[in-house]
Length: 317
Image 1 (spheres, rainbow, N blue to C red):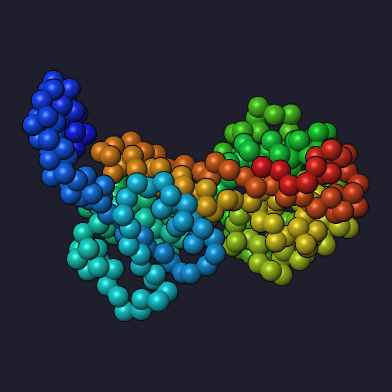
Image 2 (image 1 turned 90 degrees about the vertical axis):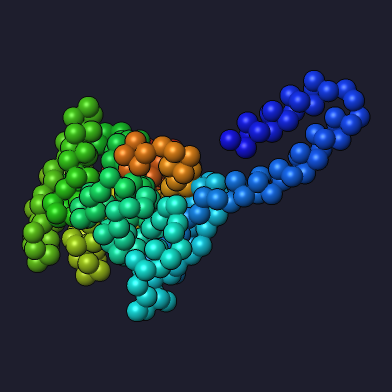
């Protein structure tokens, strides 16, 4: 509406040559300035962050750079006793940005305000169904991760992974579907009880070329992670993981998220919704960017048929 008003004023100016008319044009622009600022500031987003950690802060900064909105922030870890529903009713935001799983779960009962989430792993496993909710997961797409594995190990044929179907079943189904178009086989084994994990890891001996450690924290406790990397070393089976921190333990390859870019993705979705697009028409998406890091020393020690150029080229994106 504001742009239409300005175009009318400009047209009026072009049709006028008299100094008095030009003066009227500038007076009109002067009176429109407050409306320009009001229009830019009228869409307000409440950012609800679960806790104060660096990746969440990076996501918030990325969000602010693309959302085309004004923001206020609420940190749940420092707001004990706060009634979040009362806070939303009083601030009346046009949209709520939920950062982290705690923030999202705390907001899931809200149905009358659009919610965009970020920094949530495997959101499909959460009870967050609603036509007012969309967002960006922390998952690097299985297609992207499989492509990285094939680039690193061109002769790769068998990939093993463990997963809790309740937590990461959706991701594994996508991975299995993607692998059908590739000359590889994924051997996926379900874990219902963490006590099963060591035996399931041992069952992969001589049956896989690479182990794929997906983001399923119900499967990989610190103790089990140590067991996995001992198995990897003893059986010369490389490990692809979802976090760079595991490279120091012996993983050869990690596909990490870019928290700032995930925030930017959420901000772009928010801008669409605030411009009038229905939440239902802005589907949830995965992280679009992978920051890939390698442990070339571990890769050489494990002695598989690796692509040496891949492991000597530094970090990949």
